[in-house]
Image (cartoon, rainbow, N blue to C red; front, side, top):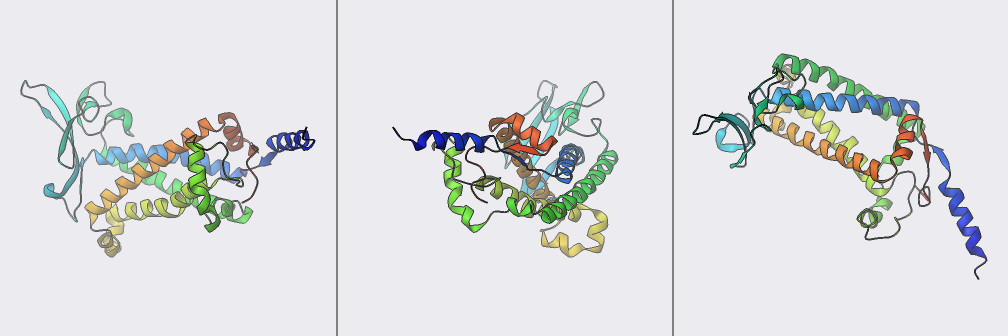
Length: 284
């Protein structure tokens, strides 16, 4: 009988019960502010999109280079319908896109329905006010998060390093249930580091830059920025695609929170304390 087995199990059990202070108060506050800001930004952005419900791969509006269009009209029987055109393919989307809830107790022609926009009723000016305000909330919250994380050296733990690259595939295989154990890692696994590095240092700066390029005031004083992005319509396309990428990140993040210990993860984002698993904390 292996005499070291009980000791190894006891060590693993002790490690599994280790609580670490994972998230500072600043991190937790900026996290929840970002959650609220992101939801309002997406919904108010869809409100703004409703005023011109199409995306063109061009420097200006061009139906011949249209990527996406969401439209409403009447069918042969005179019934209102909604359709979505994506790269020329037409998809019926009545009561979802093109024709649906108008936010005032009825239905009408609009790209995105009221339950997906903020405000719910159609109002371009109000949508822009909400969008601009929460854009700055997100920007200043992000700056506070980065500064606090750098000072506490938490930010360094989130950055993907060269030594993490060989662990990306094994970690993905673990998530896909094709590998029994994840590769040894620190507080954040290599896939988390790759996602956070991309979001913090690629997607977020780009969505801010493309958003600024869409502002008439910024365009007036920094037109080369808009030109660099391919024009206002191209900037609008990039902004929309980056929004979809961030939504994809958020959905993946939520799924992982649910699948890797909802109570443990929520406790860490509410109180700061996180219970390490047996494979965590083996290295940075």
